[in-house]
Amino acid sequence: MNFLFDNNLPPSWAATFAAASQRSFPDTTLGEVCHLREKFAAHTKDQEWLTILGKEGNWAVVSCDKFRKQGGAERQVIRQYGLSVFVLQPSWASTRYWEKLSQFALWWPRIVEQSNTVEASTVEVPWKISSRFKQL
Image 1 (cartoon, rainbow, N blue to C red):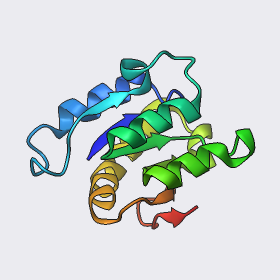
Image 2 (image 1 turned 180 degrees about the vertical axis):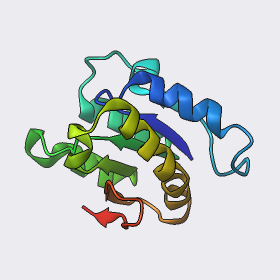
Image 3 (image 1 turned 60 degrees about the horizontal axis):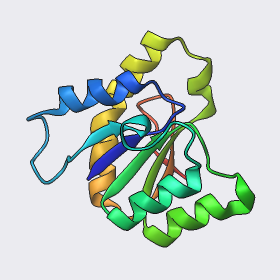
Image 4 (image 1 turned 120 degrees about the horizontal axis):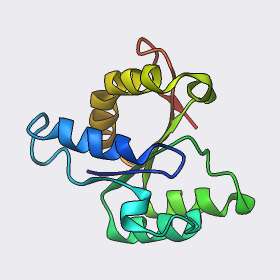
């Protein structure tokens, strides 16, 4: 599975988790890990880049955005192409950078596992690692 970190997350996160994940997962589990700006212009509309990823196949998105804009068109694209989306719960936004990064590091293996075992899921990632993903 390939992973794209949305514009509302720091570009450094994609590079950090791509590097940290090398040889940490089976070859078939983790493909490309990149930030949106590595594949698309920063101002590309969500519906456009989601459609492109959907057509390419085998992509999961990590974001803080619940994709509820444009009258549900974004969510329709997500469903149509079977993209997996991991949305950080709103409580992540009020947390300082290093705490947020370290907490995401704890979630990362679970996100990778979930994306490879459950097809086309859109879930919320809670703050507490003892919690479970919540279906959106």
